[in-house]
Length: 475
Ligand SMILES: *[C@@H]1O[C@H](CO)[C@@H](O)[C@H](O)[C@H]1NC(C)=O
Ligand SMILES: *[C@@H]1O[C@H](CO)[C@@H](O)[C@H](O)[C@H]1NC(C)=O
Image (cartoon, rainbow, N blue to C red):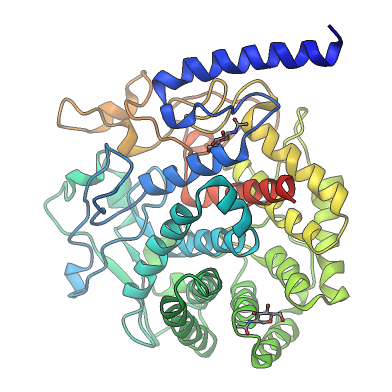
């Protein structure tokens, strides 16, 4: 038997044992996700289950997460509005609009560019539903042209309590809702939400033209509101400042929204808007960021403009960023790009995605694809373990996440569920954890929210990169 054949046979044996052993625990995951040979379709499937587990509000009859039920049905009552729906942010239960919108934009980008991959994975319908769960909520939050609800739930009050979303309100009081108005404005939040709705309008253009048109109308209105009333949103929604302050300012979100509107409409008016923002915020937008994610979209603007306009000027900016990411940015000994202490893998997934997008428009495709594949491989098991709950070899079992940590019995769920040394009683399938430190060290402990929390935005670029890689396997 030659070496290749031998390896194949052993590989098949190992993966069939592996598939059998995980089959009992997690039937939907027993699909050949093994070390070094990853089934991107199966991981996309799992990631979409994670998003489903984060749903707030009234759940549909065909829900797929048995341990999740209706929750937070009073959201918006304090202000006389229906603000139910949307997503819980992370391991907590707040609905933070800013990262939620960034997540929807990045997910939509992946769907718009790689619909074939979602089709191949058999996940197109689930993916559309995941985006619609977010965009339906944003439409509710946009209560009039110049009024937008950007948060439901108070950060500190929420974080002081550990329990199931279905058991709220714990304190007997309905949670607050916070909005931005023309009193100050909320350019970063509104710009990002405009981008999300414009991107989603492209994703739904063929499958649901009426919904797509509604999304685009709101995207345009939010853009005007964002641009005319310039302020960081945390000036009005002060509670968000402790959690999701826009450190990069709002020039990136204005340009990001204008670019998505340009792509959604082909209307040269939005190219003029892009140019206007590049004039005003040129230092930032023509510069090189050190991350891409819920706060700083600069690299996304550069790459998306390269994609939409084909202009060499933007390709050069995209290349400057991705060359730095691939060649110069710090890496751990085992190869994870290390961009921040918090949520290291989220950054790895995000830059993998944005540089796979740069590769798509012809900027250093071989190097960037290799990099993207390597980062995703690291997340899925190249170091001998998986960092995605319920997926692959030795996945995290103690994610910092309220709902999945609460056992069915006893009925009361509190901080004792957080400190319980056992694994989360419910498997939060598809959630990528924060991840290792700069030395690849990682401990699967529930109280370590720096390395072991999960979040909507963590899975966004990661899932987009999976779709990009699956697309490359398909063509
Ligand atoms: C990959 O996963 C999909 C389901 O997500 C499954 O249908 C397919 O058979 C798997 N492919 C392999 C090679 O295991
Ligand atoms: C914009 O132009 C592109 C490329 O020509 C085309 O594929 C797309 O359908 C157009 N979109 C709209 C909304 O006209």
